[in-house]
Length: 407
Picture 1 (spheres, rainbow, N blue to C red):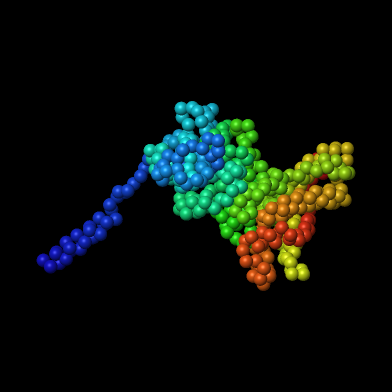
Picture 2 (cartoon, rainbow, N blue to C red):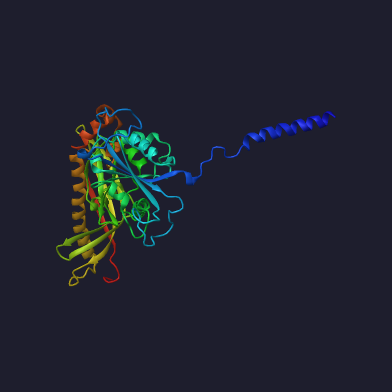
């Protein structure tokens, strides 16, 4: 009798414990009931047509702050395709659009997102946010408030791409690529493939935040421009100083930056006119970089050792053949001179704007800690010192392949 009672008691206790973990998804929210934001574009609201606040987060418009315009690209459940376009519009128009583009205004990004929540029926989620585009006008102001909201939000992935646009950012939420019906996924694919092919470093938003938080390094972001209605050009690097965008490179200087950072694989070709062999196209396949730091007369000096493995892609002048070791060495010497000019151009631009996107300050801090601790007391101290930093370049070029025609 006692054994049976104990057995029943044990059974009831087990069932009571199981009831805690078998409560089911009492707080479930179906994916169809969520507003999944795929992309955001942030612009400064036009001064001549400042909209009135919807008073979602405050009562009266007495904040005296400039307003921003946020364009959100929201996925429509069941319509986001897995393949290329079948002829329908990607961003606007058509009865089966895979995304819904909504435009709202606010004094801050958080304010605008609250206004967005007020205008859509489903709760908005940023867990699938993959692309964030800010206009150059916004980037040239302090991004502290924008970054603060994004870094505090646990839904924002550190592998999200943040890009700076030439002109209005909202135009990229309506781009119409033939190979991808969703504009945000097209931009995401473009950036990821640029990383794989050596056209751009893997500069996700988390990498940018990490660079900006270091005293000895400044951040950079992709600088993009729209071409026609269907394609986007990666126009250069938007580099920052004191938390603001201060300038941008040209596309070929992206390759120079990646070479100085030793980022592989190589992906850029350089066209130059050889004095002996005419126009020549050289493809950079591999990059290697080594940095040495020396303190000379109380000031740091940086020496770069850069090695480039290249191949002869095109030789326009067919009257003069490149078919000997000596001729290849001549081409290597001429290419080295051209590459040095591009490297020096990037260095001069960033030094003029006090933007150390190469992270040389971190090398000085690591290899000369006594100098760093005595001279550098804030990020601005290094930015000022970087503008007068002595940098020596030692470039080694090797042409490994010349193609079948020249053999």
